[in-house]
Image (cartoon, rainbow, N blue to C red; front, side, top):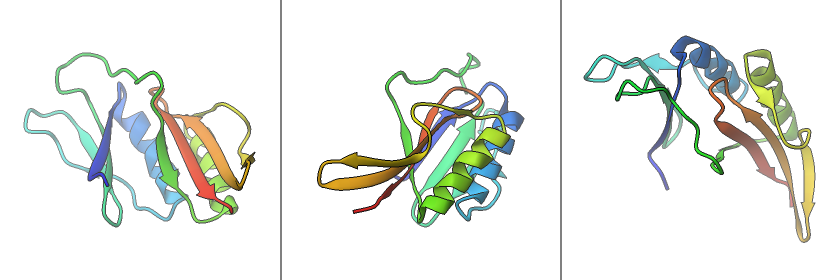
Amino acid sequence: MFSHVMVGTNDIEESRKFYDKLFQALGGNPGRMYPSRTGEKRYFYNFKDTSFAITEPIDGNSATVANGATIGFNIESVEQGDAWHKAGIENGGTSIEEAPGIREYGKFSMYLAYLRDPTGHKLCAGLLIR
């Protein structure tokens, strides 16, 4: 449905380290640096049909987070979700909300794990169980 998601960061190398390890847990590769036309550093993480990117803000102001926004990532197993969450914590992320695990929603269940990245963006790894 979307081509890419890009989030701003106030420390590009701290965020690169965080996302390199986070996406490694999902089978991804380290980010590739592509500077903007005006010189800001950007790292892109390319997946099957989409990309995720981190960037220094082009307008020169500080990066901020969107209140109420969550960026969700599909995972293939509970074990992969646990590895994703652990990689995030070990590389500057903060665990938020409930501990990673399966949540019951009436007729279906989901595994969910939530983190904030070093800038404060809210991330979720999720898997529909049934």
